[in-house]
Image 1 (spheres, rainbow over the protein chains, first blue to last red):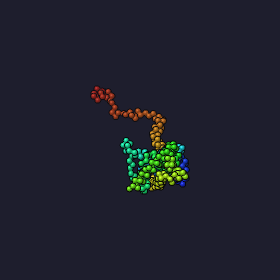
Image 2 (image 1 turned 90 degrees about the vertical axis):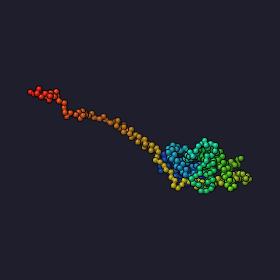
Image 3 (image 1 turned 60 degrees about the vertical axis):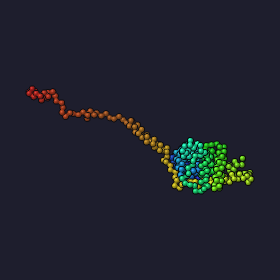
Image 4 (image 1 turned 45 degrees about the vertical axis):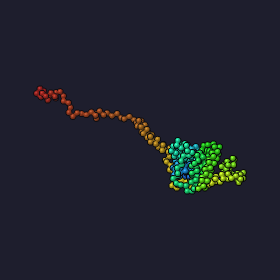
Length: 192
Length: 122
């Protein structure tokens, strides 16, 4: 079953009007856009970064960037895919800022992932966080957009600005890799 | 190899169901993927900003820029206004600047009268 879509929250929001007003500098209109998407944006960022506190900081950055750039939003893409694109870019930027030295990390398959400020409430979520952190950035991003946020292949293609065929093949490889990690983790836990 | 791909794509079909009942490896994949889906569903429900989290929006950036540009224009307008002013009326300051000496220089005759009073005496 597909996860719920970000725009299926049971409310009617006249996004075109809100975007128009936001372009004219109406903070209240943009505030309504923030209210609607801040949790979804936060989830995407948290899926990529893993740390709850850092994810809030980056979510703030995402909406600042969106507010500053809303006048350039032409409406060719959906508003939420445009916001997701900013979220993915900002989260990946934060991830790269975190890495101390790319030359040092070059030999390692993945740069060390810091422990989050808070531990996950459940072992399942803790496992998910740990395993997502071990996926390469592009694989992590695509499973988050599809399996966490429920975007269609077309919406993912729009968000990541990649062809539809790439979405399919990348998602397949990402899920296969995540499943392999999941299986190894499960077997390791069962062996204890 | 087609069956695992269909499993990962999450597209159920009667053929897949039949295959799963016969293939142990694919059944394990399906089981793991189902657990991962549940983990994502849990994350969807739990991963949310803290209750005190608020996105703080700045004053509208382009309005701020416009205000800054406006401030820069003020001295420009002031300069333009001043340079277009009518010329100052001509004022003759000479009478004011010209000072009368309190001790005017004495004439030659007066000096002589001081030195030689008897000579000039009538």
